[in-house]
Length: 149
Image (tube, rainbow, N blue to C red; front, side):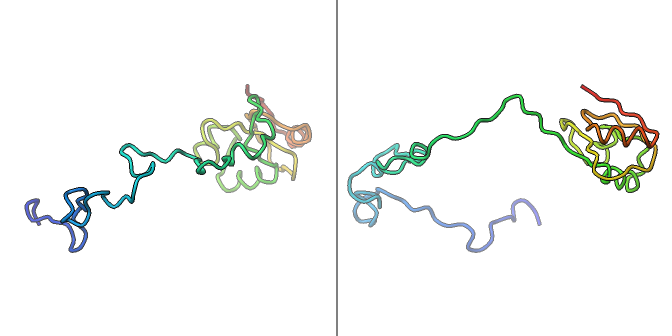
């Protein structure tokens, strides 16, 4: 097969509909757009959320709530999950770098450790936040916690 042999599959290419080329074509006059009105004019563009004069839904429905610009969303790991991840990925310490390398968090995620479950292995943690219960559990197992900014 060479470049000069290439052509589209049978039935893949259709002839373009030629509009407004005289009455004899069958598509002259109004060019299949009907008679008069906004949609028959050149440059017509349907505006987003236009409902033909009816009050648009974004104006009918009242505003509710508030998005806090200072809200911090954490990627949360419980101690039970940490225990399972240590065994699965053979982690020596629980750091953001190790989690990123193993595809558990993205570069921009903030990580928090919660105290649900038990920790049996001595492990060093370098995370953004840790609950009080998790911190005591980690330190009682012989590990350390370093909270990053």
